[in-house]
Image (cartoon, rainbow, N blue to C red; front, side):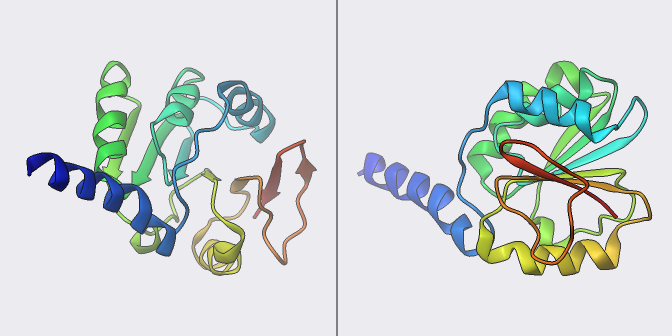
Length: 160
């Protein structure tokens, strides 16, 4: 009986997020390194990962001296990220929180891998909250009304 509850818990953790943002899909480490380099963010700046998954982007950022904060609503991925970030805890943390309810005004950069359906809502949030010259890296999906200043094979980079 406990296995059934465990399976139900796992299914809920990984499937209910579709109604808030996007399901967990791992990205490639080499993409993270390239995107952080292209972003122009440097040591001492703050990068926020909206839906930080397993924390790999956060680790790539801290290796460049960038302070990194992730928001994750899946408790399993949050726990995994928290453990993976222990060696980097001075520069990185992940919060078990819905990023839609977080103010992003102190971010120098934002990374997001969100599904197309939510991009208009995200663009409105970013327009309201981001400070001037903030960088937004959108993996795979583009913002509907903003023109990127750089496009890679799989990402759109914006300056706000």
